[in-house]
Image 1 (cartoon, protein in one colour):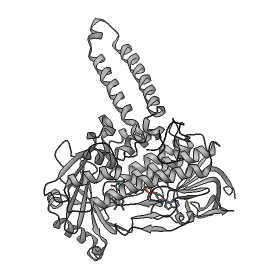
Image 2 (cartoon, protein in one colour):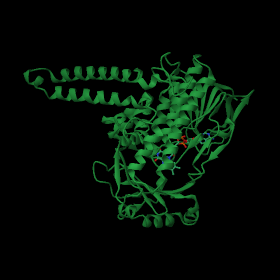
Image 3 (tube, protein in one colour):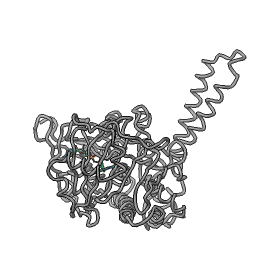
Image 4 (cartoon, rainbow, N blue to C red):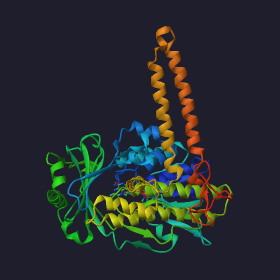
Length: 500
Ligand code: FAD
């Protein structure tokens, strides 16, 4: 048939944040990319609380920042926790870390139906051939190398498409992740179940923290309470696996009973009503979500996001790991497609950095689940796992903001954001200055100024993207590679740079 034997540089399976990110970053380098998504968007997904590294790092690289601003998502300054030994809730804000100061210290709480749609539309705009209603059923394996996929098109016909690389970004229900070899190892430690629904009219934390994620531990587990809009709140409970029988039977009743067992959440929902219709009307359950694949890649094939691994909902690392791994995979693919470096070295770099970030969150979360500690002990654990020279609190915020790797792709946005804010400050002062009182044509003045500000802003953005930071020059391991100055490829480190 006509679509058989289509040829691409890259085929991406799945159009969630991981799939949209890797496909866009490869297409932006001029390569031919096909993305196959099983569902018709918008589709429901859990994972609504985002980190600054995703919002200001990855989304800026994708060129989607303006689109996100327009969507008016709930600003998230940090988190508020009733957790551990202290009876009183404690709050952290991303802005205390130097990595996320200024305007980039605020992340978003997002309705995933909207957020994922924005990223997928952007992939299309950037040249990705996106096909919805197309479910991948297998990979094409030839001579030890993955060379394409088999999928069903929207009419139900079985098709083939060929490519130099295939990325599996099809999430926790991936049908093809096992093709990478090795097993999916389920965590011995995180054996949790989540039950969740949506409420209207729930209470808000006092300003300026009203957009914070609120997490509240209680006897049987902990709650997340995520304000998505002024009215709408995502509410979920994470329970230990041995509490499975508590959520069997009537889910709505089970959720209501659990809410009554957690005084803080019960108080916040006292005047709220559960949403009963539409995509938010269902009470959902998820389990068996904490795992890590033994291998992350083999020739021609790599995993990103939940297809590779996920840890636990606490601290909202899921979309961060999905989009960061997508950036790492995109660098590897771009480098090999351009014939710059050998495939094995590039994908070893992707896997090493992906596993590092996964391990930081994993090891920290193990310590965080020890409820007998106070917050200072958690901050100390963050400093220990990241081996950071910053203060304990700052190490903690850097880690849970997604900035522990110190990659400029995730952080440089800060300096751009700060400089842009400074420019606009200057701009508004100029506008307020008495220039127009002595007859200057204000419109002309403004438009010239606007133009020059935009131009300078663009320059700064370019510098921010292409500039080098000390951390990017140093490989993270012996024989390792470093991001190229534009962040889109891998490069050999300078001779002088040695790993710490
Ligand atoms: P997904 O978002 O799952 O996207 C995969 C896509 O692939 C889907 O659109 C799917 O339709 C498509 N697909 C599947 N199979 C096929 C196929 N065969 N062919 C083609 N397409 C296919 N993360 C956070 O960042 N913050 C949170 O607050 C948070 N809370 C969570 C709470 C719970 C209870 C759980 C379980 C997870 C939570 N997460 C959270 C994690 C988050 O949901 C995931 O990590 C994130 O969605 C992973 O993105 P992804 O792109 O890898 O996969």
